Image (cartoon, rainbow, N blue to C red; front, side, top):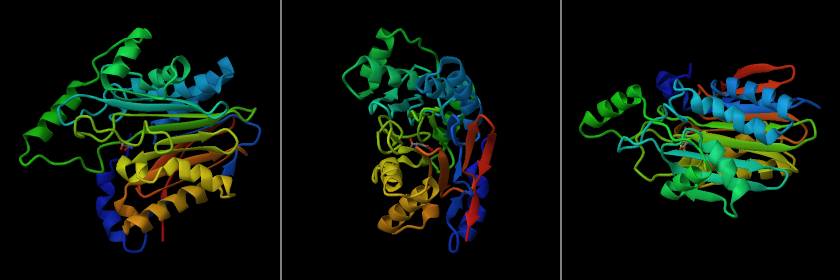
Length: 320
Ligand code: ASP
């Protein structure tokens, strides 16, 4: 199950003065092997599906899409696809983006309602239109024309949580604990890199609010020559700095994936004059050499890594 970051709140504030990174001991290589890395524990079944799809179809683009579809279809994942958290008006609005490192092609959708697989619609935006980002009704109209099926996205459980939230006066704003995105990046044995991310965004967000996830360079960025990066956490703290783009550019200048993720958080924290622990941002990255890494500011952050030999979660630990 997903770790509720509220459980860590006490520990985090106690540690904040000396230690504010959830870091990873990973910067390993999956040489000459397919590699898939995703955010959170629900990224593990997604990455496994990605590997299976790659082995079956030979397409890393199919692999990314089908992997993310697993998290989108799982009602227990309360921050992605069906069963995702609604906005302040009780409506589930989904954001996603898809990027192909080989062609530098990309597609995104934002504030998409009633379609359970925004990542598939985002991929279709890339493949079937001259555009990159479609939002709201326009995105839904496009999904309909492309033959995607609609579905009720708001589960009874999410409806009652939302009603309880709404009944509280004054209404609480979204807290750092009630969101999470799947960002999934991968590479095949020919070095073809791709990635995607999908989310319902911050729970009880303002209607129309769009986070970092469908914004290229923020929630996701893929450069076929260098690598890929993805984000989860409070989107506003990522998108003001084009976090994923920055990580890829730092890798271009020679940094390892983990160091690039860390340096990006440090830069954001320094500029915002905040302790990293107050930012709630978490990144992962892979490079063209098949190395991966991650860094985050939430103690419960974890990533899933799947290669031909490995299928595991890597948990973060706090660094002093
Ligand atoms: N980044 C997402 C957003 O701000 C939420 C998350 O990943 O936790 O919409």
